[in-house]
Image (cartoon, rainbow, N blue to C red; front, top):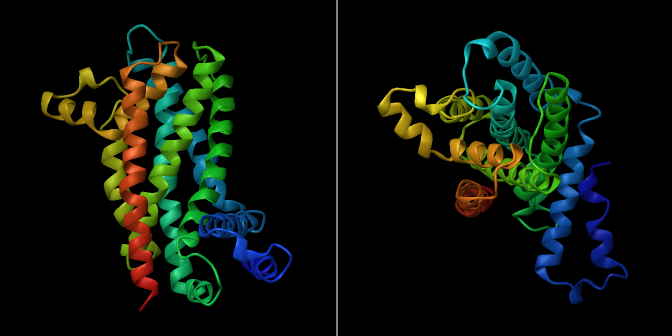
Length: 277
């Protein structure tokens, strides 16, 4: 049975007295139910976790042992420099999965079924992004463990690590809404992948993720130092490597909040227009 059908109708008709509940409450409940549905697919299709487990694992080993000896980062080890970049890169790339999942739901007609249910329109997108946020928690945890095994040694205090973890999750959640928007505008899942990686590859590799931006040509350095992925990576690096919570961290949180504030409403608006036809 679909998880979307097991809670909401009973709650509306039963003892919860829905007339006493606000729209925000029901929107939240709908979001959690859709998120539950998406997470229930993982045991049946475990390959959905490859992009937040196996792929970052391979990137860590590749850069640590193949390129690490040739890249100089100044006052810290390369693995310490690398890991914040791997964290952010993985979360940014995972946003494509959000768009692919939505595009597949649209193609299969599942969204048409959702339209017939008494549920908030925004819950389909919000539930997908919340489910992907849960996967991001797993991905960051796996990457942290792998990083520790190959020499990563965060130098900050536990509070800084917690704040860095929060920044990473906010980053993943914000970029998942970019994926949701791609899922609305791309013609199919293949289109989402093509559009997504065309946009996200330059942002992740032309950044401070893998090499210091000082080694780049001047024209590329200007872009790399001021684009959002670099700012978020530098903020996470600042928190994980023992530096104080400063302007870079604040800018990183501001970028994540700004991305979320712009792309979430746009994605929901496009979804409502697309499903109202």
